Image 1 (cartoon, rainbow, N blue to C red):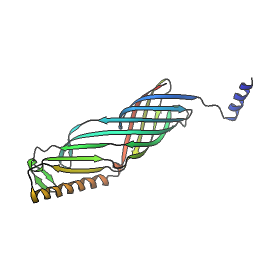
Image 2 (cartoon, rainbow, N blue to C red; image 1 turned 180 degrees about the vertical axis):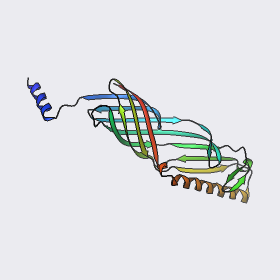
Image 3 (tube, helix red, strand yellow; image 1 turned 30 degrees about the vertical axis):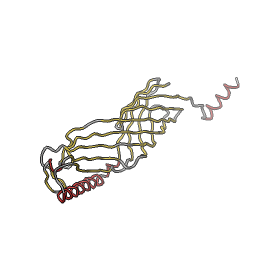
Image 4 (tube, rainbow, N blue to C red; image 1 turned 60 degrees about the vertical axis):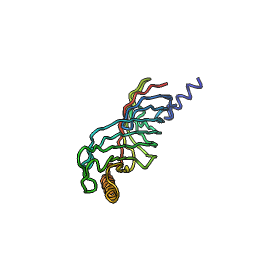
Length: 220
């Protein structure tokens, strides 16, 4: 009887007890890679952490007139807080990610190319290697999404990570040029690198990394 009166009083005052939805584990596919998340929700609050990775190749990508075989490598660990303002499936999220992601590129030199305004034969350049990486390792992120109820739930989120502008590095190795001609080639490669970096820095959107995520969560 006493417990019933306490429950009625809490309901009347709007301080109803919140039941815990509990612990869950999810498989996730996102623009940050493939991985898993561990989550806990209690009432209108949720907490989650996860790790995602992905390697893939993109052949014959044209960058400033040069074709590259690109190999992006994604490594991301995340911690996040979810707020369910309506108490059900819709959620607002934010958190922090530790990201070690980069893209390596190898120039496909099967015809004369222009480097730093000067034309070279493939045999003169040797290998043209590029790398794109984020200098910032800790990156805040925000997003919104939905997470259906039940023991098995589908989750979908969209958001943005404040990654900062990536940094490009370009180098040439091997090749037939020596002496002063090699020095000029290296200077032209450095000029090409500077132009690429300037083009990236001029794009304001490039410092924001989009997040689109689809997951399947199992409540433990």
